[in-house]
Image 1 (cartoon, rainbow, N blue to C red):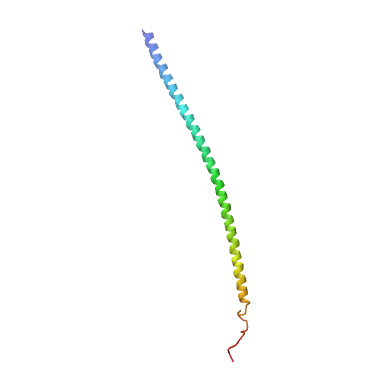
Image 2: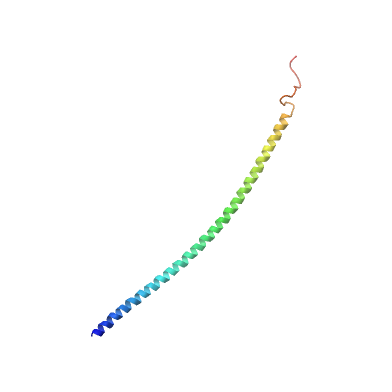
Length: 105
C-alpha cells in the first residue's frame, strides 16, 4: 500500500513538473515573440530616424540656399543704394556745388 501512495505522490510531482515545464515553454515562446516584435519596432524607428535626418539635412541645405540668396540680394540692394547716393551727391544739387542761378544781386 505504501508503495502505491508513493507512486501516486510521484505521479503528482511529475505532473506538476510537466505542467510547470509546459508553462515555462509557453512563457519562453511569448518572450521570444515579444523580442522579435521589439526588434522590428526598433528597426522601424531606426529607419524613421534615418529618414528624418535626411529630411533635416535637406531642409538645412534649402534654408542655407535661401539665406545665401537673401544675403546676395541684400548686398545688391546696398550696392544700389550706395550708387544712388553717389549719383545724387555728384549731381547738380550736390552740397558745396555753385548755384546755377543766383537770386541775389
